[in-house]
Image (cartoon, rainbow, N blue to C red):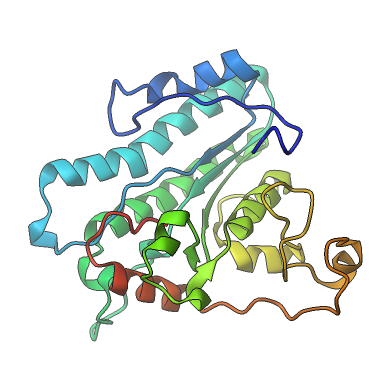
Length: 264
């Protein structure tokens, strides 16, 4: 992918759930191979919905290691690198609408509400630590934000599962575009926020490019941006309409049950 985009990259094997899995050297290895790290996107997750009393401690610990402690360690190492060079940078923690505290009683009968103690709890901690980190490093020109997909991220595994109707999927392009937008935002004003992908793009008035970054994703260019889309000369199409974050998350979780493939 990065070669087609005219860029370069590297892949490192790492088990984020283990102390000795390589996460404590990942930033250093990346800098040795590619140069200084200015942007960190914590995008890995372990998930699943299960009743509170059915969770085994080992599974909960693994989820916490991947969803909380690995992002914490990588953010610490990235901040240390930025400070050593006296430069600003960007930290983005990919979160989930499952972090939102269910309101009740009466509670909605959804998996995130009745069985989201483990997964939702880790994402809630990720959101909370992001805000305090943003406060700590704001004066140094370093931004920290949490970004969640607006609906169900259309990963190949989730699409193939047939858990959801097409209307409940969000293209991967939109989450990637929102992350890029955060990387280019002014760190002095756009930091310490818990954001949803499509809402943030609407706030910024930005179109959505495909994953190559060279063309607009179909149906995602608006206004002056449509005239620049050379792939599609047809009349302007309406914006893609997706369900609200709560509707999408609840529908996704209800159908997914306890399968650990349900990760946003």
